[in-house]
Image (cartoon, rainbow, N blue to C red):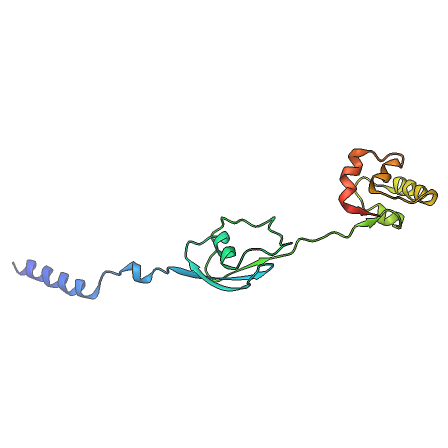
Length: 154
């Protein structure tokens, strides 16, 4: 009987030291995300703990015209205190087929030294009036033109 009372007293003693923790009081329900760059309203936003990138961008007013979202995962769950930076789409400098040097022309895909020289010789005789005129140069067909069309200008 003494042993039972002793065990009972020990249980009461240890039970008094420990109490159950209510996890709902500890668990965070919101997080803060900073949004920078090419959004309508950059700033720090407090969002639901489970909010994804798309929800944060919506709070920031959406993307500006010219924003680069090609590498953006809109379903990604961002951790608390993240910084979301939206960059601009890089506009490549176009190469003028009427005034570019041989070296500049060679930066175009499929254009080597001999092809660059043919372009220069053609434009010495007559200038290019349309982008499609470059297909009059020997060796430049529709397939190559399709590769360089967005990279050239008059």
